[in-house]
Amino acid sequence: MSPKAFIVHDLARASYDEAYALQDEANRRVQASRASAAPGDPFGELFLVEHDPVVTVTRRPGAGEHVLAPEDELASRGVQVRRTDRGGDVTYHGPGQLVAYPVMDLKRLGLGVHDYVRTLEGAVIDALSGFGVGAARDPEATGVWTDCDGQSAKVAAIGVRVRRWVTMHGLAINVRPDLSHFALIVPCGLHGRTVTSMHAILGDACPPIDDVKDALVGALDRRLLDASARAGQGASPSSASGES
Image 1 (tube, rainbow, N blue to C red):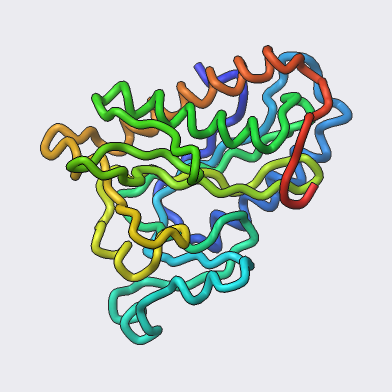
Image 2 (cartoon, rainbow, N blue to C red; image 1 turned 30 degrees about the vertical axis):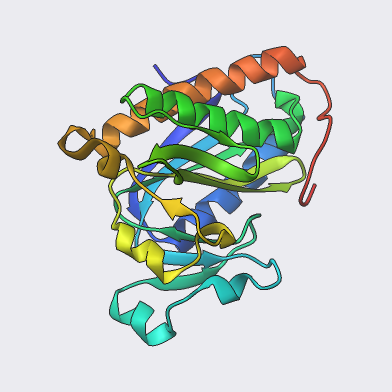
């Protein structure tokens, strides 16, 4: 049975440009459906994808300086570079990483951007816990973090944009990506912070990415429905950041 909070689109493998175009179309659909939405209708759409190797760079001043590898090295390794309009800094996406783009109507959910981001983090933490990966928030950095030999390491990145109270972009869970590609950048602009993956933690016990998809969809569905119920469906968002 499909989740109640959103309609799911599993893109399997797709380029960053293709997935962005689909998000953009969905964002417009969700905006247009707001006035006619009935109680119980989905709050939006969710896109799941593994990207071809790509480094995304935001508009934040200095973000481009966090791409450490020259263009010829990136090209030789098959890594594209794309500008992006989400929040945050520099991020890598590639095969073996589960990327989720929820396109959600925050007005109908009754959530502000801060609470929405915390909801995404909570869903990732829930999904990882089901596979025996202990993870938590970091009060100093957005995303989901886990212990790696006594050091805090990022296992999932989060970055969003809001357009007329409908979200774009989302989260990326490192299931079994090529971690060497993260050395091409300063991930999220955080110097001295380690990146890890479920495979690095679990080894041969790492689940297939499709199993992680199922766990994330279920966790995100529950978290969004619970958050909306607490906020009061239809309430105005209490706070926001980025474009509204």
